Image (cartoon, rainbow, N blue to C red; front, side, top):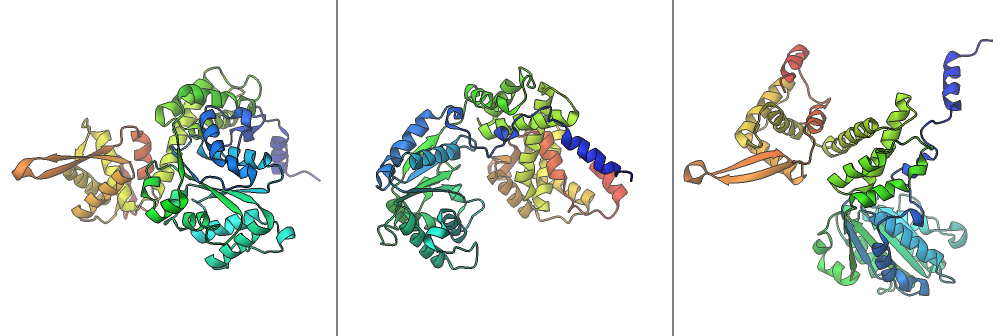
Length: 419
């Protein structure tokens, strides 16, 4: 009987040795490196360890807020120090749990996740369903778990600012004081927003009494060292000499984001793999950087309404079609109206368009400038794309929306060519 040709093709591909990657997990963004691979964060590790030191003696650790830009090692350091506290605790029973508040974005979801992670049902005989209980019931089961299993717990709340209120911080920080549990609880709240701690409710700040640690962006040398520690993700000789420095330089120019540097390095390897190349080159890095920028703006712009995307497209079209550096609201409204006609989309009032522009500025996509033209002219608002955004990428991403409805496709193609 003759074999299925498609099965032969798949089997042949699966049997091949990966020519680029030896251990791809080392360049996955969520990978937590071993201590010797952590670069440029000795001071932060020392400071956080000092705040949590009392935990290894069975006493209450300090509550800490870590803040700084994305990709500056906050989550990495928090996980590393919490793990080290647990492994150095001797007879003290320390539990650690990490919660991503961008996923568990309600208090009930977060408490349910904490309870399920810390619970050993064989020890406690307590069942914690993922859903279906009231918030108070999840808290009750959590405290029962803590009392049966632990002397101290360290709870990491990553992206804690994603919660609509601060109640979880209040409840957990006061649990011992209010007699809910005898287990000592230490909170590590992580935020990308530098001023988040200042905006906390006064009662929460009084209860939490947090220490604050600021994580500065990585510089190019630190990023180069971080990537060098992950070179063994690739096979020997696969990376050309300029790949790691270029990935580090790109990330340093933007925000000193280690995640971005790692992401570009990994994607460069994947592009080389798809090209059938045995070497990752500068061209692969540049293409990966472009793809990373597109992905970032797809995430940022993807949630915008069609109307906001049209307003953004009007601004980028003006940038592409003129030599001007910024544009008046009248110019934006005129171009927006033309785009609506070209895409068959209904227009909104001038006032709504101005609101959309302000919203895009709030999201750091656009930059606004006000100019007072006197009694005759009043105040005029000028807008432009934020200077560190890639014009072509933003324009393409904003214009790429299946919700644009056009009655005559030939007219659409002819009209959109001019934008």
